[in-house]
Length: 442
Image: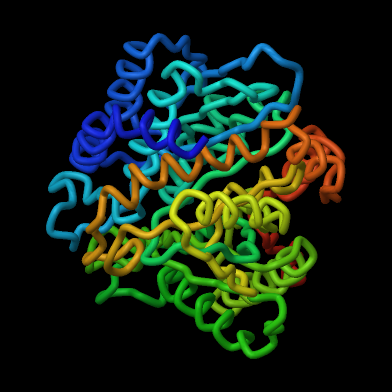
């Protein structure tokens, strides 16, 4: 088994490593991955795959049927980049760069697809393998994505939940995706989040001549940030709460009182209840700041990502696969990451694992991030994932079925999960001023 997988991937080594370099050179942020999608689609189709593409957005998936009854295994690779203008190799116009390593995932998934076309690679496997090039994992440019949602182009900010809403994963029973890192490991999971856009609304006036006639929205925004900072010590350590705002708009000219200021941020946490309860308190602080200056504030809360809880049995599959391929023991960590990923959305309804493979250096999302070992990050990674698929789907897919049947999902179905996500969506002005004072909605 190992020899066959090793040889199948090695026959496509040049394709994999070329894709890693090419995609590194075309970084695109979420729902804008047009060049990357076209590049990969051309190569998948050249391998003989028929692709299913979503209407109006990027990404695609394809399915491989073993010809024997069994579960559907989803293997993913992400398409999007982050924005880090300080990176020496960032796009000079957009600041986009793959200092997240997603380009390596895409190259790896292409290698898996290529290897699976080799003779004998499906022998002894049961069920179906779905390969998905998925957009928009990095939860950034919230304003842009919110506009896409308002136009009806997308329903969710993240690519995996968007694909879930389009029915692309309705038949999937379990899933995995391997992310590049400095070491080979797996965590227990990661926190979820709510995405927030906060718009303070004031009144313009001459900043030098008559500032008393204005209401400074920028001051209200900074007061709001400081108000949240003042309640940080009340965040419970066990909830792993994170709040990290940026001001994306704060005035149009220096000699006018800013009438509008905008903040983008997340509220992250380890549990659904922890996130929602903390978000309400954060909204109270943000609204209180607006009241103190006589401004108004519009808060738009959008469903971000669910907390990721890696299936312990799926973690073991990853560790077993790595040991079978390399002889190396992987020791999972007993920790949760305080970053967020929409793999959490999948873990809400099915067993998943989102482990890490070696191959990168520097700070994730930072200006010094690079893939320093593309063979480990892409070639060896493709082999490990193919071993994982074989461990799950061989022997009548016995191991996969045991994991699926033993998994206690937080939600009974994709529909139930998306209904919960929709319940988070809330927007509108939070203050109604009147002669007697003000009415407040948190």
